[in-house]
Length: 47
Image (tube, rainbow, N blue to C red):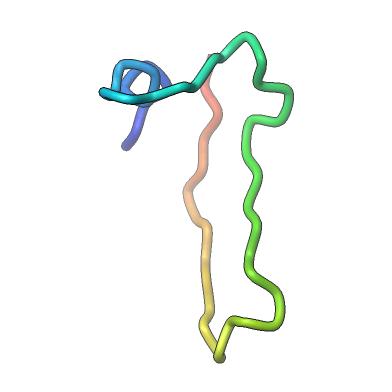
């Protein structure tokens, strides 16, 4: 599990949680997948 506090505290992080308006975004590279399958599973957004 990766917590938001760990991401913020990570050296070099520029994550500013006050500027996040979309909690989860996944951008596959369309047209460059070469038959790769990606699964996102067991995702929880906790306050």
